Structures are given as structure tokens and as C-alpha cells.
Amino acid sequence: MREAGDLRQGNVVKVGNDLLLVVKSIYNAGGRNAATVKMKLKNLASNAVTENVYRATDKFDNIMLDKKTMAYLYGSNDFYTFMDQNSFEQIDLTKEVLGDALNYIKEQMEIDIVFYGDKPVSIELPTNVDMEITYTEPATKGDTSGKVFKAATIETGFEVQVPLYCMIGEKIRIDTRNGEFVERVK
Figure (cartoon, rainbow, N blue to C red):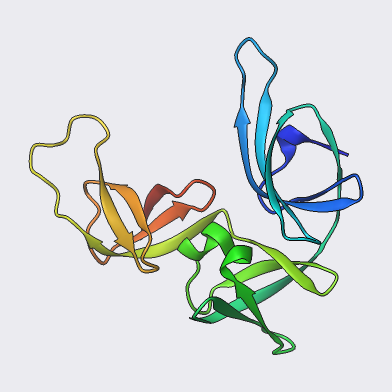
């Protein structure tokens, strides 16, 4: 049993007879009231998505799934192809399965794909990924009071906020849990 406060994106829980994939989980400390967790859940049988709010102490049956490390090969239309590096088996995943992970995956990147039986249900990204900045505006002189950020486009086309000192062509580390800049990579 796991508490709602401990569940993260990619976890699968059992509610009644249904297996639900946690698509998004937002923890709210609550102040005077009890802490709550707002979760977006996807039913693995019907693919229906629901949003519910639970107390952080609510208990769920945790379901163990199989994981396979696969390399991202390419995207075509709404399908993204991954290959098992050992067996050379290939699978296609949709945008719905990948979700926000599309912002952080690039060709030949190895990620864990989670399976329920033979069906891929989600992916697990590393906590941090290193990406190259492909476009950002130059820093403005004199604008250095406090933490000042600017928009930067990374090699996947996703836009992140970076400190003023970051330039085009530099590699940066991004936290995949929240999309925030962590540090420059040497």
C-alpha cells in the first residue's frame, strides 16, 4: 500500500477493479486543512482520463509493472519508435503515452518504458537531461538584479527559462519533473 502523497507520474495503482496510471500528481500542503493530492489518472483498460483530489494519507494498492530500457529512434506523424538494444525489437508509442516526455527525448536517448503485460503504458525519464540551447536572446546589460531569467529553445523545440548568462550552443541540464534549468554542463 502506498499513500497518495507518495505517488508520482508513471506509478500505477489499483482502485476497485481498475488499474490507473498516474499521469500527473500535484501535492498541496493544505495549511490549516489536511494535505491533498490532485491527480490526473488514466484507466489502462479504457484509456479514460479522470481528475480526482485525494487526501495525502489515502492508501492505494501499488501495482508492479515490467520495465524495459529502449532507445528512441525517430518520430513520424503521431508515432514515436523505440528499439530494445538487446533484441532489436521495435515498438511505436503515441503522443498520449509519451505526454510531456516529448519535450525531453532526443534520438538515441535511452529511457525506461513501462509495460502492463505486452502493452506499453508510460515511460520513465531520468531526473535530469542535458540539452543544447538552439536559440535564446542575448543578455541585456545592466539587468542583473536578483535572479533574472530569459526564454531559451532547446534542441527538442521545447522552451525553458534560463539565467541571462546562458548562450546559444551551450549545454544545460534540465529537471524533467518540472522543466526547470538546473545548471550549465561543461
